[in-house]
Image 1 (cartoon, rainbow, N blue to C red):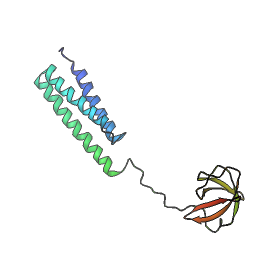
Image 2: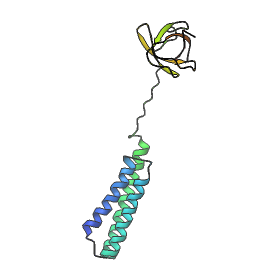
Image 3: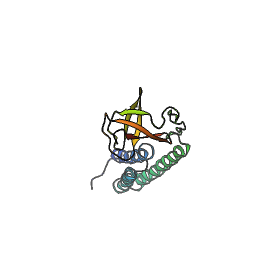
Image 4: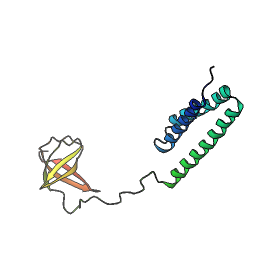
Length: 158
């Protein structure tokens, strides 16, 4: 095998480290990118021993261990600090009050209900659920019940 230059071996080492960092910070959980990066780093170290000798090979090995250790440490530090995740939660309720839409309220479907879709009650367009039946758009409906902020309707013709 021809001797590889130190710059090519260094580029391989950096590419492997870059792939490991991408695994930690951009696409965590895939492991494929991290494994490929690790294999590239191992190949760079082995090729450094093979083509450049023991001294350069050991240098590459130490650099690979230090760089890997720093990237793993920083990856876990960011992971445990939750800086890359959204910690807010939606804790509000639907604006729909059971008092505004009551059983018997009449409306017209805007979309097909299969079994859910949209219906218009007065000037409000709301998400509604049929009682399991298919109801075409433009059909007159009547509210059957309101439960847990869900409006259940039935066709006026049935």
